[in-house]
Length: 303
Image (cartoon, rainbow, N blue to C red):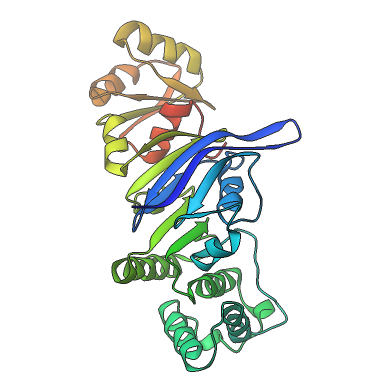
């Protein structure tokens, strides 16, 4: 059973086509990561899935409910954290959570119990009665996340969830999400530009120019990128690319003074290139999801 189904979703703003016809399926209980740079359409897709905007054409269903025709039913099944904050900074963290829960019909002991559980899991106990405006960016982010989890949603949508979090808070967040998934079969869809976060997902969708250009399990995507990646810092990228093509039959990618190529013979080729005057340094490493993105789109993830 699929928690999310999108078919040929299109969205434009004036002459700018943001989503040219996107298809997406996310299974119940799956953790799905959308990996892509700013401007790739991730946030626009999230805003459509959360009923904040409507697509120009195409259909999308969340938990079996149409996002355009049945928005209220969709909202009952989702929890959302966007990049932009939604807290009232003049209220305390506890008051934000109380009012957030009340919007979903929570009150009394059940609400207090959930606030206690989430504040402990996200290390917020000592900050519950502090005004939000006095909290650090990372602490505010944790309150945002706690608020969206109060209802124990069946589907959790997170737009760059760890923005502003320190490493310990990031670990707490993903540990909590892992627990919720195991206990409630919660579906999680999140956007990220962080490699380690994306590799936590069951599947990763690489997004570029409003399209899902690759979808697969992280291990499978990395395997397709090859056993090793050779990264070459050079003063003459085009010459190195031509050399690799001519001498080794390899297709390389050149960006900002660096050439990358996937090859099992990375160590041997690096040794040969070390004597070339235009080569400043070489590095051999296992591929990352950033390499997968580069080899798929020809661009860096952070462009």
